[in-house]
Image (cartoon, rainbow, N blue to C red):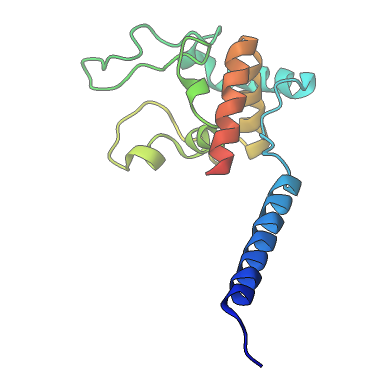
Length: 159
């Protein structure tokens, strides 16, 4: 039995197209990224606001406004606490980054020698409490900023 080149090429192309179709089908069936933040959940947001006031507002401000000149180091070399409102950069980071930063502190990202007044909240706040605080913060952002953060989250989930 002699196999012709065109038969082999047809078989290989058919298998490749079938595999590509299967990949596309299963990607379409995969659930969309679901953020752990729930700024639309009133109970979570209320709890997050209470926790924020107790643990965060003394540095980041009662209105999430941060400290003055938050982008410039002070004479002691430390950066002031940034705002968490729309004027800050919190919404520039995916929620998993924000959760890890809150739980483990900036040293987890910048190295153990990084100096900051931001404490790690592991052992102080549960993961659910950290998510509640971040949900509260996100709930205060204007719709356009929330949409942009949602888009950022979706992009981060694809990588």
